[in-house]
Image 1 (cartoon, rainbow, N blue to C red):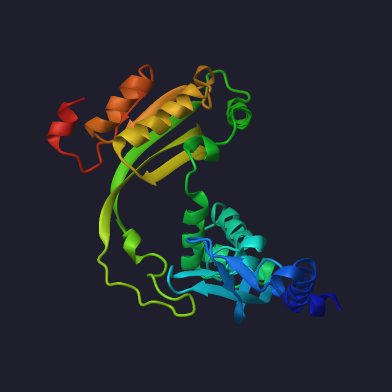
Image 2: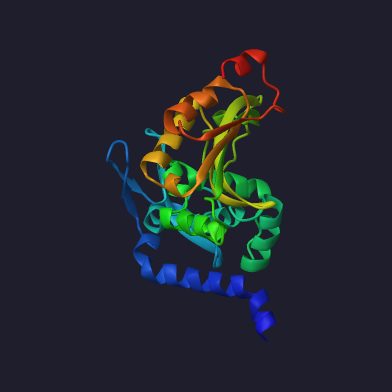
Length: 294
């Protein structure tokens, strides 16, 4: 019996959600007038338009009145605004759950686990897009573990040892292929029609990042990492935030920086961590001039 209910749970909870929405927001279902967002003119309701959204409790179908004023080219769905619906089919609760999962496991595995655990099918590419959307505006301090958690990991590695554990800071950069913003989402058009995607060409951009990790014999213990499509100044600012916030207790570790010979890396290292042990990665493809700058 529990297995049967488990397989139909999305349909059950989705239908229940539809009933609750219709009961709580009956006034929005029967609304006949709405104000234009541009000219403040009263608009008359047109025939109801059906929309299906995917949530963690299942697919929810809505039939709500539509308001449109041709002179201003403005279309309104007041019920969507009341419910706080996100653009597109997949809603914010699904996006947040997917983003949490992909921070723990690779995208392909996250796709399989997400379907098994929630009953909501979601492709790995869609997970990648949702994760980027959820992560917009985050800083390194938003994603870094708190200081007490870092201290706990350091204490676990340092247990029973005379010398302080080694904390490695690795910094590097690489060019990665990206899609331009013009290739994302939909082009302008009527809401009931999907506009054709514009032709676009990929763009190579510079991704830079760093990672703190502890050396524990033959294994490493992750501390924190920050990898973004960003400039060297932005990376330096992120490192500065970590240092000023005291996330890394430098008095409890022996800090070692490992990087190639790029001069922009060591500029930030000398400014923020002048007493760290500096290790040059000889296996990196770096020009002789960059090595000479050290």
